[in-house]
Length: 309
Image 1 (cartoon, rainbow, N blue to C red):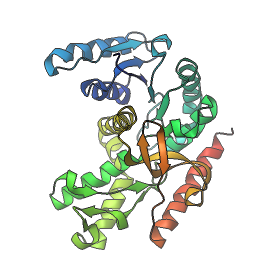
Image 2 (image 1 turned 135 degrees about the vertical axis):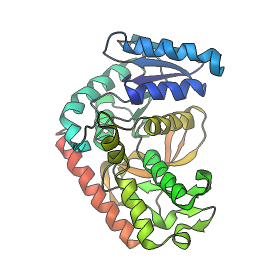
Image 3 (image 1 turned 90 degrees about the vertical axis):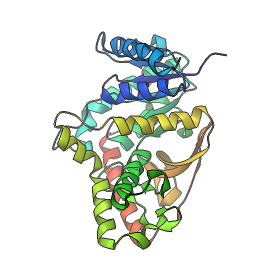
Image 4 (image 1 turned 120 degrees about the horizontal axis):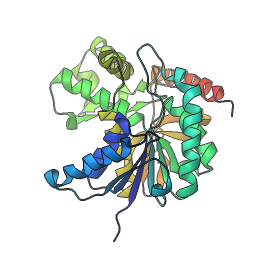
């Protein structure tokens, strides 16, 4: 029986790392696409040569056109320019709008039944664009953001408390930007509420660091942005779909009235399985969290409107 196929568009740091995680976990054969001649082919060959060392058998191929992507079950779109120091995700919108629209047309034509996982920034706006351009049902077009933001929050809590990351349950909602909403009321360590373990001041500091999690890495790297954790998050989404895991995870999903929001891609908890976004979960939020969520939604709506679709 043939393995499924994952296409990763963009062979930069995020895309190449997606290909790495997906192949090493033997989720699918991987097609790595980029416009730069030789780069996806070289990275694919390098990954193929790692197979005997780590003992995985997934095929990885590189391409400069979309022919090899035909019949993909999942397409992860990382194409676009990354953030540079001092640049907000919203600054990227005009350049990345053209890139993501073009990529979406190409992959949708060759893989009409695929699930699209968008990683390109500004994330929520690019999801909205991909849904419009592809014409796919909203359950098959989603954005990687909440899993990454939640992982950052869980990481910082684990570092603060010096406990295993597996013990920490948390959820970060909202737009993938500085107004994201770590849901402190739903955060616990093996069932113990975070508020029992840390002061309000320390929790506020961890929330602030989570919101700036990407920017902190951009400032340290100086010539790029995060890629290991974003790629891991995108591949976890692909795995949930391909293996029908029905995971409850936060993703950027299209809302039609949930949380009082309409015609917007926004980070919310969903059940993710073989049909894509199978259900959107509505959390009971504190009054403060609800206010933050609507502030975040207003920022996302402004970016959506900047697309001028």
